[in-house]
Image (cartoon, rainbow, N blue to C red):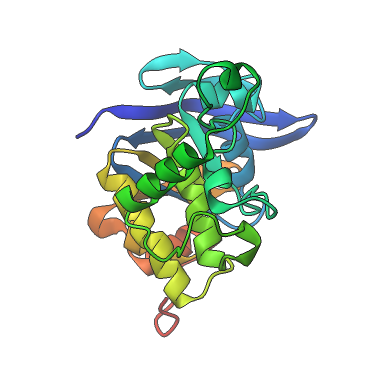
Length: 256
């Protein structure tokens, strides 16, 4: 088994009198996709916000690459190696694919131009093309194309590749294919599989049972703020996942 990159122990989170999470344990290894499933209000978003530094837990502990951490801001989580791709993608439609990929880490010109903060656009496009090629993204005609002209799958790919460039080894993906067609989903699935094979630890939030079965090595199902069950290997079967999410047994004839 590869090294543990993310470990949550007994995580709880309360908002006043409301207990959003209670006693949650979660472990993610390098080169592993761990899915988080659950109905709306189960606690998935709160758990993701704790991992990414948006919320601090009320109790419990979190380790990143074996080091005990406590995040007060998303910046602290990013600096520790956690990257997130949310459903809104946070892309700038008026910028090129390359500019979005390198946003915040643009290569600078040399000499006095660097002192003025001038961007080396040629180097930026080279780095962008290399990053896309390394992860097998070949559907983009040019890195100079504005993001506003890209398809949903291409936009999702840009957001995920950008996360991989942030010196992270943990990537949180929030419903990465929710609004995509079949061909675009396949593009994103291929990209996730390449990130996994490259050694990233991936937390996948998904409502899609077929998606979980295709991509995940394990699935932890949240229900009412608690981990209802964690399924691995042969245990990961559609009916078992649905039963854990709903809290009721899937009857014969209602197969997923």
